[in-house]
Amino acid sequence: MIDTPRPPAPHRVLVVLGTRPEAVKLAPVVRAMVASPRFEPVVVTTGQHREMLEQMLTALEVVPDVRLDVMRERQDLHGLTSRLARELGAVVAGAPFDAAVVQGDTTTAYSGALAAFYEGIPVAHVEAGLRSGVATDPFPEELNRRLVARLARWHFAPTAPAAENLRREGVPVEDVEVTGNTVIDNLLWVVGRGLGTSAFPPARTGGGPRIVVTLHRRENQGDTMAALARTVADVADARDAEVVLPLHLSPAVRDAVLPVLGDHPRVRVTGPLDYLDFTATLADADLALTDSGGVQEEAPSLDVPVLVLRRTTERREAVDAGAAALVGTDPEEVRRYALDLLDDPGRLRRMASVANPFGDGRASARVLERLDRDLTP
Ligand code: UD1
Ligand code: UDP
Image 1 (cartoon, rainbow, N blue to C red):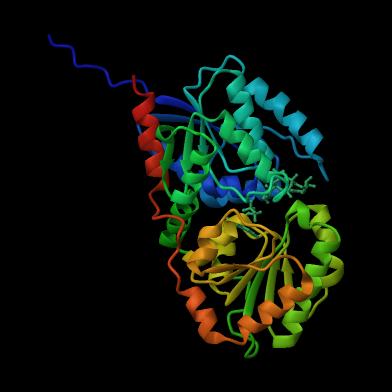
Image 2: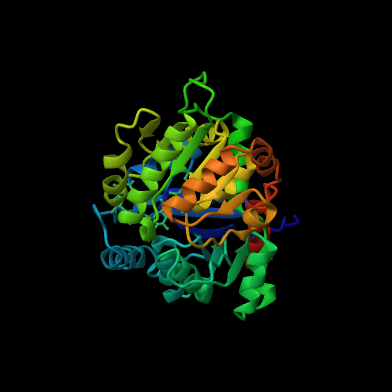
């Protein structure tokens, strides 16, 4: 009797995620691994976010194997980092993982990469190579992503400029793979299954534009965020706009935004929307004002122009392509820029029609192909 050769054992891969954007961008990687006979993913959620993470996991059909619970109200970076180190350390200690996957630039991503590194588990960094060029902006994300680059074995860069940033830092080119951003994989998956329900009313209430606003960055919290909220009110009043603002659960964000916009007649402040409803709302808008990373990437795919309310961006591709503008955080500058744009329908249309520069929906497949190739003995 002839023995049939046994297929090689599947790769046991730890996937660490803890916040809303990590769930969005790792969901397609996890779904692809679950569907592949070559992978045995073990999904660990840190709970850096609690309700906002669970909401995403449900909508995106990701089922965690291990749920940690590190979130505290108004957590500071010291406490968060130390809880993550302790709890992730216990997950990886002595565990037989072939690789660990982290995404982006959160404290969960940095702590996950460090925990794996301490155990000699090779780290795959999804969305590698984004750089604003300023170590403290966004804070602490720019430093987190630079630190993960020092810890990673594989660098999955979403775009060629991101790969070039890594090359300039001395990362060997053979360790870098340009994949596209997994956010586009996820968005196409959602579009294919049908978006959720828009938070705008079904019929427009007047002739004014529809605007989606999200704000959350640490460096904008406090007076800057309160001033940006007042600018949103000014723009809404000046152009009779309908605004939807799905509010982040961070108390620091709520403290800045709610006193200004909580009762504004033209602004609908909602809780965080699940991914299906958020993308439906974004797709329904004429303009997005945001300090979010992910929204900068999704809006061009949904034909929505974006004004980035930050001093820097690590997503120059959207700005260079003409789909987004980096307007900063000066209230008068933001107000002027937004009003000028809303008064120029031709320019709005041109921004909306720019093709998304962030990927073709096959990023996760490329991540899996490369890992399978390198992990197969
Ligand atoms: C974190 C990430 C940031 C990412 C953002 C996405 C770090 C340092 N920051 O920032 O990179 O862009 O997530 O949204 O990794 N909270 C809840 N429930 C939740 C989530 C948060 O109550 O489901 C509250 C808690 O009081 C928590 C606070 O929000 O302490 C801040 O959460 P944290 O993850 O520390 O910071 P974010 O600003 O959300
Ligand atoms: N998002 C969502 N519901 C909301 C607001 C945002 O599903 O109410 C999604 C959004 O589509 C994007 C991600 O959350 O994919 C971005 O998260 P966030 O802005 O909190 O983080 P960042 O991308 O800035 O790190």
